[in-house]
Amino acid sequence: MRSIVTIGIFLTAVLLLVQGMPSDTAAAAGSPIDFDAIDAQLQAAMKQHRLSGMSVAIVQDGEIVFAKGYGAARPGQPMTPDTPMVIGSTTKTFTALAVMQLVEAGKLDLDAPVKRYIPWFQVADPQSTETITLRHLLSHTSGLTDQNYDDRALPDDATLEDAVRDLVNAAPVAAPGKSWHYFNPGYATLGYLIEQASGQSYGDYVTEHIFQPLGLENAFADPEKAAQAGLAQGHLALFGFPVPFDQPFPRYGLPEGYLMISANDMARYLAAIMNNGQTANGQIISPASLRKMFTPRPMPEHRTYGLGWEIDSYYGEPVIYHGGSNEAFKHEALFFPKQNLGLVIQINENHLGYELLAFPAIKNAVADIMLGEPVRQVASMPMTLFGYVALALLIVVAWTQAAGIVKLRNWPERYIAMPPGRRVWDVSRHFVIPAVILMVISMVAEDWLQRGFTFYYAMVMVPDMMLIALIGSLGDLVHGTVKFWMVVSGRAAKAATQRETQPAVNQTWRRTRPRSHSGQ
Image 1 (cartoon, rainbow, N blue to C red):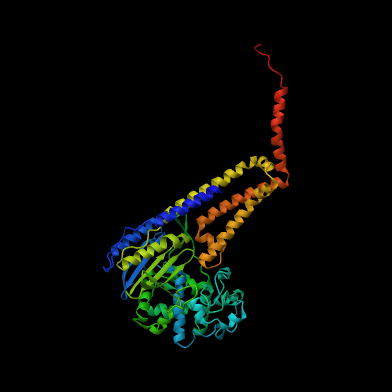
Image 2: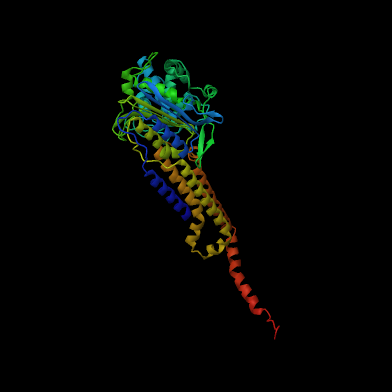
């Protein structure tokens, strides 16, 4: 156990040390965008983090001024800025836009209760059932939270109606409008509302009223159509190496996190948003509606979420953004309204370590260069190094557990010599410690991720760390089971007695053995 703690401390120290190292890349403030510097940063990131593939697009004053793919979309298919990828929760910006379009058309009302449009709508609290509005769902202020309700328990073929009906099991943690809690199923509910108000499926509505007017040719709501257009292969990261993983597509989850789009098309979408909704084919949304979407509602948690978008500042510069994270894809879209600059980054690989190490550094470095500033963020720990350290930790844990199991043959002697209380702990600790570790991991994960902890989610988002935890826990359970069996079967006492009497027998044999008189 001490070895595992030591390695864990070493891993943390390396992480803090490397994160404290400054980057050498810089650009003079106020200078034109240095696209060579951006390309160099992205090339370096591909190597440092051993990414499977990435596509990046930058839009300035309504025009795409940089677009490039790195790595591979799938074996034999290079990544390009036209390769569609799953964009995760950035989908919510499209869902919010669709809702606002229907509000403008008079088919929906932001401040109307959901029950006006879905009479059977129900959550696990009568008052919230009656008072949750569309605005609450759009801004994540309904009082519902992913931390105590997770729609990922639904089967992948569940419909939007199934997802909304299952909200009867969602218990609010606050009254609507009183606090901010991220709630993915709220956007599934909005997707269902879009269907009810428009008479179209969610996918058909978004395609007809957003994708087509914007001229987006590599944007999809149907995974089969996206696959025909070259949808990138998703990947998990295991010890710093990309491992192909087929991204699941739950039907009910489409409005909350499963649209597919290329970097170039996402940049065109940002250009329209930055242009007050004006496109070559007309207005897709009014400036007034956009202002509502980009106006955050102050909450006790100091969140800066508007209606489908995060509104924040980056070193004093206003920035509007949304990120997305699926099992096998990572995405970010952001724009600086003052500079009329937008950035899209898409990666066909994911790992929770990217959220902490790789992705923020990549995004912030590019943003700095776009703004003509020095790269102000410290360099991140390469995921390759993270992978090697995690692999070393796995080897240490496996070796320690194996060595401990081998030493069990000498355990009965130690057990008999222990006081009664120590005997109980020496056996039970092998069951208690893994249970406590799992409980702590789940509590920390829920608090940090703001959503419920599931074994599946942990296995796909941090497979290497979960493998380490599983091997360590399995070793402890084997230790505990063998010790418990030896105690209850009486073998521990019997083995200890045999070992204690053996030296005495040998000594008696040596005393009674006849002396040899040879040589006398």
